[in-house]
Length: 358
Image 1 (cartoon, one colour):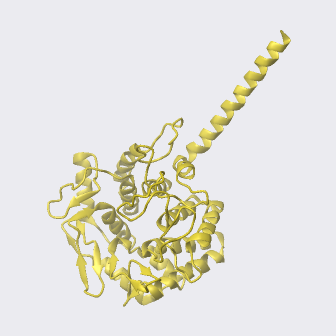
Image 2 (tube, rainbow, N blue to C red):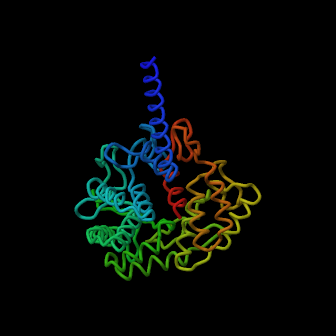
């Protein structure tokens, strides 16, 4: 009888411990569910962020496959750690930057294999802008001069190698010593460029010319041009307009007080009429060219609306964005965005993460 009572008591105590542990895990995950999801499902063994959950040898439209890691992802992850105010998280990912992504001369590889090795010899200016700027902000916030020096190294590499005339183009290939002929206009982030200029990484001429190019982007109806050919001095439009690019241009223009009224009116009308904003639209007809949505698109639109004081619309977009998030704490993919057939893209999780923090 005593033995049976003791066994029942032990079973009861064990159940309490298990329930307590589950509740603690759920409480921690509930605070930052998307961060927890990324760490669980989209992090390689070395701490780099995988582009997809699943291993694959198939290249996507951006020439990335499976568990490869991108400098874009690292930059957004660092930005999130800064916004969160988490110096430990920031430092661990600064170590990822200096260990795997950064060459001694300042080149940041735009992608890595899952094990941290790189098969590319090119950078991506938009990612380098974000990484350098975030390091400068972190240096100011936490008094870390090593962050500032690294930001300067990256900036000076861009200023030397990605430069055509007075502009910084999309990429530089160190193996072939060749560079892009284009500036993708959504890449021009004046806030980052200002931080880099003030830190001494880029010169005033480049800073002024890049900002002027952003100011002078032409439009066709609500849509901005996609690229600028530096040597031909020509703006190029896509016939199928990528709305993520458009919202990034609008966001970056808002940093220097420039409006994007036609684009804002267009996405408001689309959202009011259809309850969604699609990923691409035809330049001429303004009709949807695809039937998919993107939580990353909504996230960038939210950041833009927050920047210009469109708080009501930002909230509506947020409500739509989180419909793509798994909110059941018992689900394996709790906190993840757009998980279909056991897979998702890191971009559709990192930008919503930053928007959530905002």
